[in-house]
Structures are given as structure tokens and as C-alpha cells.
Length: 318
Image 1 (spheres, rainbow, N blue to C red):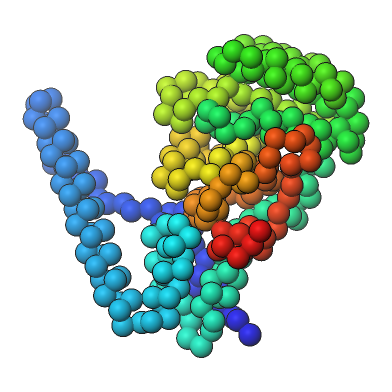
Image 2 (tube, rainbow, N blue to C red):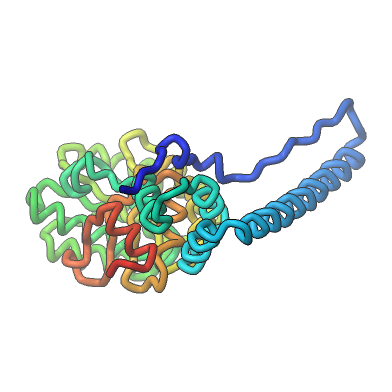
């Protein structure tokens, strides 16, 4: 029977981030000297970080040469595109006398939250804003969630709002879905109008807010997040599961994933490997509340268990 010590194998997002000491000046310096010193310190820290990573990787590879079980596990995880940080964490905690693949799967499942205890997203109610970078499927995901909710609880209990004032045709796309459901779509152009709409729709069981699609490094992303800082709004981060790991990581950081209620994994049908997305949400400790695997509304909207997601990420699930 596969056993794993939860305390030894659980990790937090902080455990997986590199950090270094911040240099402090002993006294006041002229502005130009302070600027030069700061630049030098940044360069030194960057060099130090590279050296530590290189030597750490070398030591890790040398250890794997002496440990065939760890080497097999590392190879399988890396082939599926799990991050080196997570792979090293798992390999270091691998117990003796267990099947390494089954053990790794059980640990990943234990650390991947899916919000199952809270029920399906469409049954919870509340005000949800779907955010994410350009082209990840926010509007389609909004429509799928709206249709799933309306099917169970009635369209009269649903409110729809769009903030997407930057992309031509975005309003029409959501309004087309709204007409099918029999739900009017309201447009908010700023925080004040959004707050007015939320007050107007306060009697609805669920209110969904479709937001502007922006690149994660777009300066307007911060403005959008500030606009959505109303206390009643819960943010859902829509992530393109077909993206590379570095891109997903950048999105999670840019959209302040830690303050989001959870993640919707979109386009999983287009993902050659699901490991980068699963890896990222585990490290950031974000629950996967729903997945979308196509354009059909609402048929391509699902909840998957942690087991199903992990099995697919490991290349052993459909």
C-alpha cells in the first residue's frame, strides 16, 4: 500500500520561491551613488541566484545518478513538463519501499485543491468576476457558467455584467449568450458604474462579470484589478491550460492569483500537456473550480476531481 507523510510532502508557495538577503546601506549616500550601489546589488543578487541554481541543479543531478528510483520519478515528471522546483521537492521526499509513480500521484492529488467540499461553482451563488489574459476564453467561460447556473436555478436569478470596453464585439458576444438565456447584459465603464450595477442586481443569486482581455503585463491590468476590489466581488482566474509553464506563472503573478477565489482551467482540450497548469496551481495553492474543454455552451463545462486532473497531468488519463 502506498503511504506518504503529508507533513513531509506538502509544500507552500513560499517554499518554492527563491529569495535572497536585501542589502542595506549603512548610512546616507548621494543619490547617484545610492542608485549605482542599488544597481550593483541587483546584479550581484542575480549572479548569486544563477550560481546557486546551477550548483543546486548539478548537485541534484549527481544525486540522481546514485538513486535510480528518484531518477525514474524525476524523468517521468520532467517529461510531462512539471517544473524543476516541484520535481525536486517530490524526489527529495520520496520514501523507501513504495512505488514511486503511485506515490507521486497520491501526493499531487493531496496538494491539488478542487473545492469539492464547497459544491459546484454554479450552485454557490455570489458575485464573480472572471479575469485573465487575452484570448483565454473568459467570455465563453462566463457564458458556460451562466448557462449551468440558469439551468439549475433559473435565469431570473442571474445577473450579467461586462467590463470589456476595449475589444470590439465583446459586448455583442456576451449579449448573444444573454439573449439565449433571456438575461439582459449590463455594461460598466468604471468603478462607480459597476458599484451602481451591483446595487441594482443585489437581489440576484448569482452575478457574473465578464472583464477585458489584457496581456498579463499590460499596465491596465492593475486598473482592472482595482476596479474589481469591491468587497462583494470574488475573482475567478481563467487560465489557458494549453500555455507553457512560464506563461502560466506570469499570469498567476500578474493577476494576483493569491487574492483570487480559484482557477478555471480553459482549453484543456488543446493542451498537449496538462502538467504545467496543474503544477502552477499546486505551487500557488489555488483550487481548480471548473474546467472547460471546448466551445459548446454549456456542455463543455465540467468539474474534475484532483485524481482526474493529476492522472491527465501524468499522461495516464484521457
